[in-house]
Length: 412
Length: 62
Image 1: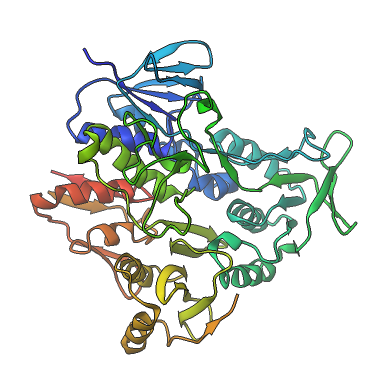
Image 2 (image 1 turned 90 degrees about the horizontal axis):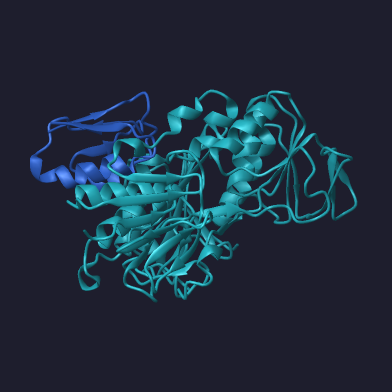
């Protein structure tokens, strides 16, 4: 009997890979190795409904228990021995593989500065993190988020909706810089209007407190008093377990367009850990840390794992992501760059709904929609088809269903 | 096959409408409309839509 296909990483990308292999007719054994003791769950509610206490942790289950998969949970992989074709677990056990799918995701950057280790200093990644933080928020602490990115903004919004005193700090001049310019300004207004204190353009020098967080000291010498601090400084891909594997690692595990490792055709990669060449890539490869990429990349990697290298599908789907803050939906398609100029392609007269685009040599490279899901479906198609911003502007002008007329470009 | 969407869960992400515009679309009110009775030849796309839905709101019934 052939050795199993082993999925390393028991989260969204892993469960979608397993599901794709089963629906693709694979009837051999599938083993999935996971660091956490839980079956795969979906993460978006962790910074929203679960944190707020309105969604039960169990509701995040992704149904992995219903798939015919041998789950090896509670122990992370510590190595990949490609010579003997074994995944090595942290407890020394070896799991033989015929092919392996790397889906180890990413982990949040931790706070390495002064105050690391204080009680009340947290990151948010796992369901256990979310449950701990949910319980902390019930004690009505003053909250500070170190970082105003995706997680910082969502946690700040959730805590503020619970009535807590919230300060968001970031060295960047605007929140959510990864979603491109134009969006940040809008999000800043959103948070201020809901009573979040924003300290932008200033870094954090130290987290202060005796045993527990009492505040954070900023680079300008001021201090923000707080009882709870969330470190939201982005994430790093979990690839260090592969450092002796001989696989080429860059910003993530380097792959070709079919999510196959450039070093080994029997190793496929999906989700946050994958770096692969994409038609929208400006550098050689892209890496995406969002739900839809884990789901779709997992599916493609699972299907490709059943095929010989020459028959594998390319993964060229336009990346999409979203964030919900104060009940407002922000959606992004494509790859916005913080330094790109933005043009508002349509906006509702009262400015509460809009779509902005990042042009790249005339073509649309990314679109950001605020409270405009129907319009976003159309913009996604334009990005897929490589439409020019001028073509889109003309179509918007002629479309009675658009939110409003296009505006001139504004520099970043 | 029948395609069912739990509208208590749907949050109009539009992933399904991007995958299968012949079955799913968001209306002027941004709410999802879809065809319940779908040809067997679209099964792959429907399974893809089920898995692409961030809210896990879509179900297929044979």
